[in-house]
Image (cartoon, rainbow, N blue to C red; front, side, top):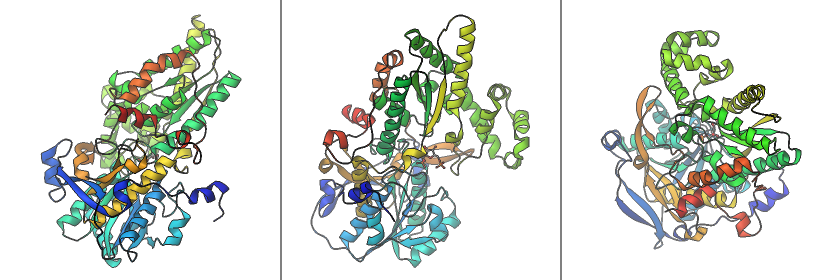
Length: 546
Ligand code: FBP
């Protein structure tokens, strides 16, 4: 593989580890835990893995470990730092016994079921240290949920003498990790399952998980480009840029980029829902900001749009819920694409039918596109940024006729998502991921299953970080998925009472009227700590309030 100068220099970076993971590791167990909601149902569904204690790793006595083999899976969307989780896991198990082996299952959970794997040796691992991407073993979105999949997996696990499988994934993949852990524990197979919190979306966080890995690097990458666009906008002074940002349902990425870049406008889906706003309310809000800036001679600006916005407009949300139920029926699944609109219109309730008909046909069709394997609407495929730019232009044209607006409006649209998912991990993500991988190794060595590796106190210097494990059942509640109630990890959406959102609200009117753009520039890997090692503003604000 040919490498860039930065890749070569970056390969030598030694990620920092928390004190508790640096030498011999001892397990400190906390009190038994409960799930965040629906305790009785979750307990019944996970009798073998419910209620286990929180775990913290602290320095301890030297211990000898027999060699053990581990399998690792990258699941779902790419997130910067995934390779460092695997490197931390590899170094961790080799440190406990150099004869231990690490196997990577290829292209996600499907690799376990299809027995598609490779041994990850030191040569391979060294090629990928501190790099972005998931290309070491690839990723996939196969949902591990059926008994036959678990049994197929067990065959290869037994054949390779694997003691534990580490699933590096988001909320859905870790939910599946928990189901798999319970299944193997119930059958007394002697196979442990450990999860690891990954996703650029930042929606896998709670009292135990400060942030999911990849969020830091992805937001910094998008903020660099948003900053560049803002500088262009401020130079040419003739375009409004509508920028959609990945993140699924949650607006964490949009909010973090807003805190970093101070755009003219940033929409927050969770607020739209809480205020019961309509599409027209949102369009009017943006158009009014355009009018206000035009009055000052500023016919330019930036609008950040979270990709999940459309799902949060209450009327559209109700429509999507009914569409989900309709499309999950055998009849719904079998309707040919070209007959789908007519079929849907014939089935929808009157209220939802009116909303469906009010949407531009293209957007309505995007709402019925195939769900991902976890039943989620594929919001990254819905072109909300174009929809909003078009509707704002129409509203301004009306206002112009009525003499309410004199400015010029030209818009451009962008979608940032894939640009950031495989960026070279920031120092924060490089260190965080390496520590998560090391924690996973220690959870395995200490015979734990159904746990997610965690690292806390990450706004402090890395040596003061606290590593450990949280029982996955602790983060679960019951939710409707594909028409059925299922145990799932509770997704973290933007909290309207949280410090990041409140900070944004305190500033947004000024950002909308004046030009307050900030240009963060590219991620820096070498240089002063205040430039290279700052965690996200979201994390800093959240932790400062604790
Ligand atoms: P995960 O939830 O698997 O981490 O995926 C993150 C994400 O990048 C979302 O932000 C986005 O909506 C989705 O993946 C896109 O999916 P795909 O990779 O299948 O195009």
